[in-house]
Length: 400
Image: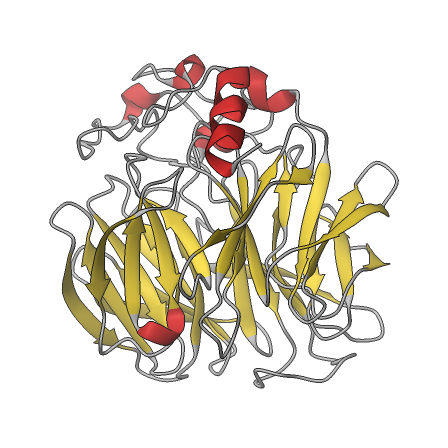
């Protein structure tokens, strides 16, 4: 079966059309477990973007019990891209065992859920070459399809209206907007002052995104409607920004910086730095809890891009969104290198790759106890599937 037929078949099976989120969670004003949407003014989203049911908590539809019926049929798996062994390890979370692995392209960086939740894309950016590719995984079968040649796909996001995939071409200082299914190029935006462009999150209304510039200490703000750069922001200290996560109310962007050992706070609308929270050595990945009250910060345990295993500084900091205070710290027993990942559908486990230790950590979100599961060489941006939510805006599973 060719690639196009493969995707058409996958979409036909679940009955989700391109450019529209599953209808089961579309109604404006639907109450969520975090409160009724009538408590705050409605958000005026960009055309084509699904509504925001609860403006006080944009993660309201990713809470426990909000899995779409079609997605709920997908087998529970954790997909782990192994950067140096050029393959994907597949973990069954019910047994904590690797149950499958398969080769992909060169230098797989992240496993990215598609906007319509029907494909998991492995971003193989082929570091140092021009042979990048995207490998689709069918989450219903947990097996890969034929890869598509794509230039430098370090990371990938989706516009909130579902009309485009955004391939983050890190080495090219460029954002490539592509058809979200065929991956044919639509248009590109150059970000010349953003050296090492890699991670992002979107405003609550979908009008702009903020991307990090890892090797320049900058952020870049991009207009998602006009498809143009709005400006750059130099962070006050640190100098190696990584993951980005917007606050539940959409007012603050949190930016992990692995040189500053903490998280910067940025007002997205005014695009200015407003604060800093110290977490731990090599702050890297950011993930919201299922109830939208806390943020998990993966501290990689090193300032080095290619760090050493068993770092004593490796661990997780838990930040309370309401107070912006660290309320818990969980160090990896014996040291480690937690990097990227996500939270289980029931919110009880935080899954993170141990990048320099060739393992995956499963961390209990109640008390921070954890186990390690051996995988391939240098695991990076793993995703947990299935997840609750209406649609994905990319990375390792930022759902709304």
